[in-house]
Length: 433
Image (cartoon, rainbow, N blue to C red):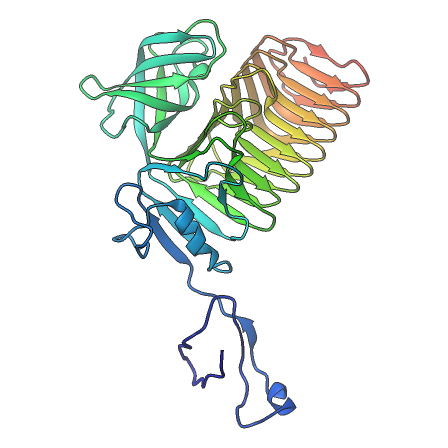
């Protein structure tokens, strides 16, 4: 770009994102120009705010609220040009698809990106009308106080259940397969390894996730690379097929910051942090986060990655539930990775293990509880010099409550319902009863 005359505040035509500008005295020449150097800085554009509607959008539109785009891919492509400013992508209610193979929605070349969907809460479950199915997949018809804001194809986070035994088995992020507006009933499909269905006057809270992002039968729905950051709010991610993952965080950062809630239904695992990646759930508003119906682990951290779960929350509203195989664990932390649990979380309905720390992985809390309930495998396992230092409780574990092997350490505060312990092969248990 050629030299431009600048007088105080000037709009410079031809400028592009990422250009450098040098301000100098144009009365001088040669080296004297550089001696008059005043500013050498990067020009930051105004952060973009793009709107996307799968029902009324078009990728040739300008992306404004009145002329939305149609696909998230197009919004991310345009956002890439604003790499230093980042921006927001506002998703209307609907179902959006990631590419069918590979990295999915790739935000590796982006920073400070926020994706916001549409959601709602305030619905309550009053009882279970009926159930059908078998172990690992139950269909429930639920009576609610108002289903006018719920549609088939939405996903719902169910949490804060009570009033019947083992009500935690209903916790999670589940697909709505039918809506009966006349009788205020919804039908949901729940992953639960129990051999019998729940019944009775179940009470519970419901968050409606109206914006759904599906992944093709490939690897990842979202890929967040090194040095990049993605924040998401009020969406549900549904990885398709067998070996896919909802959030693949390869050295980058993903934060959950909800107005209403966030969910993942599916995945292998649901969230995978690797190579120093960071996952953080900042829960100022006490809203639900549910990771459910996964094949291996709900959250897996590997190779020096980090996670902070349920930061600033005052409720037990971070839920990992409903594995579909006996592989992996609800929370798996390995190879030097670390998890900090700020407010209590619930891990339930697992065909495999509840919590596993391995190969120098660390899991710790500060007064918060990790509840491990309805677990077919072992509830808490620390192996190969890993450590679990937490307030944690076990209820209804078919395996062993506490397992520490090969230099693994479990330091437990206020242990209850331990369901047995095993500290053989050089493991260490402290405070476990």
